[in-house]
Length: 307
Image (cartoon, rainbow, N blue to C red):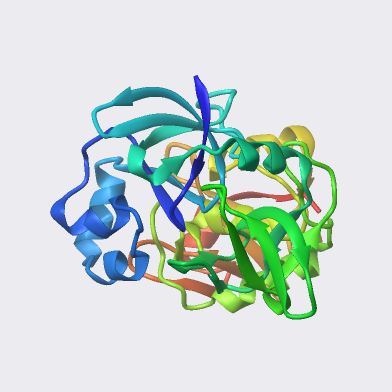
């Protein structure tokens, strides 16, 4: 078991090694090209990820993982900052080994230095081979001036980010530095720039979110760490959050939905006035729509407040 760090802008985590198709090349190489990958997928291609249980989650550039096993060109990892009942150490899955790296200086700074967080949907990392970084990518802080913030990269190099597009957070480092905790209105406000972003099963980046990836990310943006998946969030809320009745809903509360077996399989962010924000499914995009109509009224099973 060893530490490693993500060396691509977004690493997609698979349930098993070698499940990728030819059309998934841009998601499994280094560097990745998420726009090229996603634009080449049909609706049926995206449904395959769900129906066959192909993808687990995603990781952003510089994120820490624990490597537990290697099989050919793939590594089995655990993700310490994505809590799940699947594994008490962290979310499990497989990534191409070439998307991981390890540098001792970065490893030390990751746990000791303040972190620089991307606060816009996407930004450009200035280095020899620039990368487009997703919202909430965070990297160890080195120094800054009025225009740029210099950060440590997982390769051990330095890169620069536009000072207007990041925030340096000198908070606690367990499990890693969180942004400042905000209220429910701020969660809704953080969500709105992503309206019309296409849904992606397992998505955890501003290139595409799934429902729970979206709700988790918008909470993280406001200093609140909750589990990765909707069912785990719902259970976590019953134990550590606050259950909210329909008549008491406030913007920023999470609303949950269950299938016919009673399993929680969808989550959205209450936006006020009887509407909610969510990454709907593989046919659609991040949207605002009425909560108390149609299938969502029928499937509604409760709400949680974490703020």
